[in-house]
Length: 404
Image 1: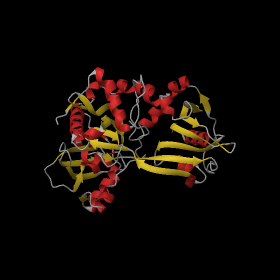
Image 2 (image 1 turned 90 degrees about the horizontal axis):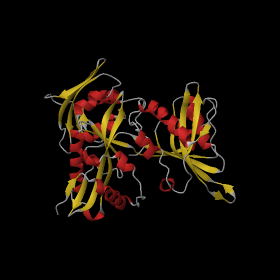
Image 3 (image 1 turned 30 degrees about the vertical axis):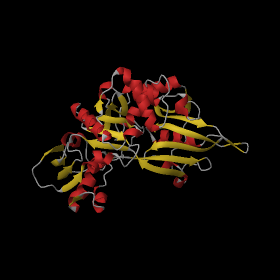
Image 4 (image 1 turned 60 degrees about the vertical axis):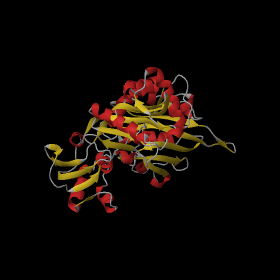
């Protein structure tokens, strides 16, 4: 079998959606043009067997926040291989073509959300953030005695949300590694998308904000799923976005969504492990959290990527990097001082031997180099690994609040 991997033509876009739907188990709604607006067709990489599309892959051209800065990022997305063509090396061929394209576009990192967390390490991606689904029962919503005093929350319509939400998001985007810039098309096609298929039996999106002296300080978008148990309201509030820029806005918005009548619980997915809700509630254990992997990062240009971010302490280390795909294997000297970071290829003996997956996992500011050394995934002196953990750590911790 010879499968051709190539970019699709404009008239093949609908076939790409249908093929992806076969793998992910959904029927694409008619007239849904959101991917066409956001994924450049020349950056797709689909497999064709005798003219029939059998696999899909696309790339979002993102600007991704990293500690202390931002870099272009190839957003790996829509990765699918139909059941008849599994285990034939097609995914590897698509990924190589995709990563060649990322290099050609001079994007120093690629990023993705993994449908299966066992897949992408062998392609050099590392789990660089974690994500939580948080559930708060309606019976336990009192805020801590030291939480900020309540401030008013104001319900708004979609038109006002479109005007004010991006400015709030942009303030957080420059602060949190893992946030990516949302273009106007992204806001329209993804963040404010509100079709019957996206509601899953709940209401249309609702919008609310908190104001302060300088304008809108935070916003929330949410849905409500109605339910009744023996004549009593036991519905569910489903939070999509909830972002604050001040302690008062975080407290007010969380109190607003967990305290609504006729519901039994509030569920918020894709939350940070340091979400304010855990410290705002009177009983932090009342916020039940289910942990999952979040953003995965693959470094495509080691010097460029390591020099693009800031560090929390000085370091001088030579990294012996092993890339499963061979793109960036080699030794690199990383030097960080008060003047900034420098990184270049080196002929010196490495202080640390590390797979690209584990370097990517620590890149966004959630390093676990000593932990990974304890289980044998990487090796190096205690001094070098401790210095790496200290230097790569970042506050706030990485958080990617939206699947792409």
